[in-house]
Length: 257
Image (cartoon, rainbow, N blue to C red; front, top):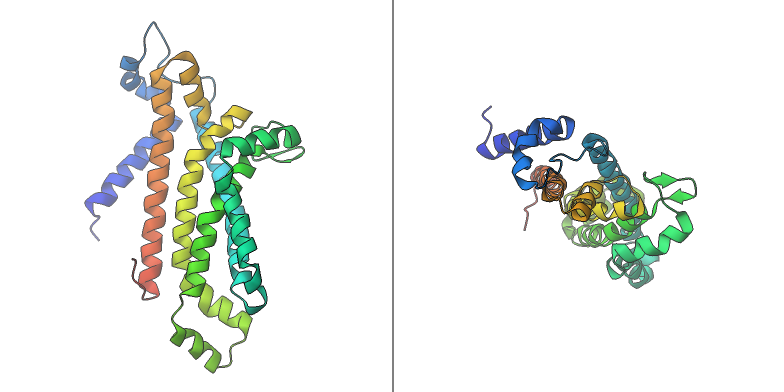
């Protein structure tokens, strides 16, 4: 099986990314021209690998929580008993987009305090809450679209063979809606990868620490390496989820619009 040029390029980029976060000093030569007055070229206050893993942990936990809540709400409001709650559900999902993440952080810090990880002694960290709220809307809207635009012939056939509501939901509706839901998750993840950088302003261990350190010390090398890692991670995750979405659509006989 031959690999496409695009896939080879992505694999090379992934290898370079892993090599950089594991052995950043090996790439000092690339960032040295961006420094001045003897500034360090590579951020060494914290391990780039640990910051990257912590950054991804925030994104993963927030995305899983957003997906469970958003898909759950979409399922409820697409059932006859929950249709009247659609406006309320939309309002809840819009909260994260209404309040900027910085505002959410400012409101949550007095309650939950500071913390490097997704969870702290008093509960979820402010960064995790901000990412969770910000990721709700795209997943909810896509789940709603996926569950309300199913081919009528398929749902009628499921009823015709005697499937219960739960059986139709789990065996027909959700599998067919999964590619559309995945599109919302893809958008949510990319937003979270970028937004998680601001978590470092409230002591969260994310790649924003490198960027902030660069801004405070006027070190362009730090800003660039932090931004590059975040950007490359976002692009690779986007591409991977897009490929998975296309595969699921092909498997269910759907076309991507």
